[in-house]
Every structure is written in structure tokens, then in C-alpha cells.
Length: 397
Ligand code: MLT
Image (cartoon, rainbow, N blue to C red):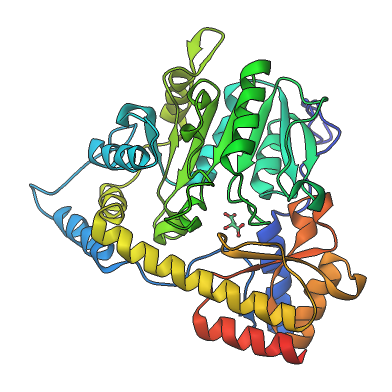
């Protein structure tokens, strides 16, 4: 016995190596901070900094206090989520002109947990990802042994890849507005994806974690794939309260699995429920009450204020880069600023230089995929003073 495991290594040449991108960034920052003894400005991971809107915090506190009383106590939550929250999300979809019944919505403790489950629903398959994209899509599929094909997002396609002749049957991941580039699919391009998925028998996984950043009066960029006819037959959608309502710490998200979605004659949601039952006991009642409060008119107004603040930070950071002659991708509806590193530096070289010379943490573009090499991402989820100080340092660096 050598202790060397000899289990199947999967169908893809690429393997899950190294650390998760944001863990790697955190490790390097910890080393830097220990050596220098000063805290850098954090424009790295997309973690919110503003407090919850007041009515959301109140709902959380009331439900939590209720757990200490006979009437207010709750045990295991319903496996699919509380109906009051599922109905509130369904109403939100109706406002987008999308018919998503409450019964199609499955509450989770965040998008990442659901994203990690998806590759296990189908057995081995081919997965198509934009490059660059959110690294969790790649990592969970590599861990499941799936083969991955990358579709380059570049200036030629406005950072919004569309299917090409070599795109066959498989699972297609779409994030709109996209992480890290901030590019958002318009209705016509999203319809191309739906058409392709229906024609090839493929599944689309649509991640709408940043859809709340699309301005209210924008009708060109859908906030849900279900506003495109036919999507209910080929797409599941993963939503999150993390960035829209400040739930990165509280944890709440949802996945939409329309009843029309079937695989080998079996409703996909039945397979989903089967897996969920063995991996989760649901989301705490106070957290679901808080999420529902975030969807009330008062809660939504508070969330919109927070989003405006972060978008303001993004504008400040973009202007500081522009002052140094560094153009960034058009990201008016994104909390991320995506740009090419100056002086032909690689992504990690620029990461080191920025940390050393300006005390600023960002995220190396190469961590989002090979096509992100030489690019960089700032998160605008920082405080306003931090954004302004970072802008000052960028101008002087
Ligand atoms: C990001 O910064 O891209 C995400 O918030 C990080 C994550 O969800 O892992």
C-alpha cells in the first residue's frame, strides 16, 4: 500500500489544481500584510461592505428573536424553501414579464452551493464556458470530471461569446451582467443562446447574480433568461441575494427549475430534489424572512440605494484609471472594473506591483481564465472613502 489513490481522474486533461482564486489572493495578501504591517485597500473579492437595508435587518432580528418563543420557533425549513419567499421571487419575475411560478423556485444558501451541485446531476458531459468567467464554474466541473470547452470573450464579440459551429450538445454557462467583465447580454444575443440550446438539446445555466445592477429603465438587457421565449424548455437560472441585497454573510440564493426541463424523460427538478435532500437541510427561517423583506418595496428601495453607491465607486475607479491612460471595459451595469494591465505586465505581476507600490488589492484577470491573462479586475463593493483613496493612489502611483 502506497497511500496513492488510483480512482478515476476524469475525462478531461485539465485538473483542479492550486487554490481557489480568491483563496490564493487572500494568502498572498496575508503574507504582504504580515511583512509590511499595513492593511491594503481591498478591491479584490466581490464582498459587500454596506449594512443591510433597515427593514431587512429588522425582519432578521424579529424572526431571530421569535425563535426564542414557542410561537416563533421553527425547526427544519421546508426543503424547497418557505412559500412566502418563493412567492415574492415569483412576483419579481412577473415584473420582468417572465412567468416563473413559485413552485419552480428552489431556495438555497447561495448561488455557489447550487452551482457546485449542477455538474452532478448529469453524469459526465461537455461544458462550455466563456473565457474569462467566474472561476467556480470551471472548478466545480473539473472536480466532477467534466470536459470543458472555452468560448473566448474578447473585443471582437463585445466580451459576449455566442455559439460557434463547433458548439454541440452540452451545458452552457452564461453570467449576465458578467463576472469579471461586466458585459451584459442584450435580448437578441440571449435569444441566440436559447435557440442554440433548443436546437442541440443542451442546457443553459444562467447566473443572474448581478442582474440588479442593470438600471431600472433599461429594457434592452434582460434581468432573467425567462424573458426570452423558449428558455423555460432549456435553461435553469441561479439567482442570489449576495450582491443585490448584501447577503454575502447571511447566505441566501435560489435556483429556478421550470417544470418543462426534463432529462431522459425525468423532470430535472426531481433529480435536483433528490440531490438536495442528501446535501442540505435548507436555509434558516430568519434568513429567508430577511430575503423576503429585501423584496418588499421598502427593501428594494434600500437595495437600490446600496447598488447606486457601489456603481458610484466603480465610476470613481474607472475615472482614476482613465486619468492614467488605462481604458476599462464598458461596465456601467456592473460592480466590477475590468481593464488591461499597464506596461504589458502579466496579471500577477500587476497584482504584485499594485500591492507593493499602492497598497491596493485587486484580482488578477488570469484567475478567470487563460484569456484574462494580462487583464485585471477591481471590485467596487468597497466603501466610498476606500474607492476615493484607491483612486488617489492610482493617480499618483
Ligand atoms: C467574486 O469576487 O467574483 C465573487 O464574489 C467571489 C465568489 O463568489 O467566490
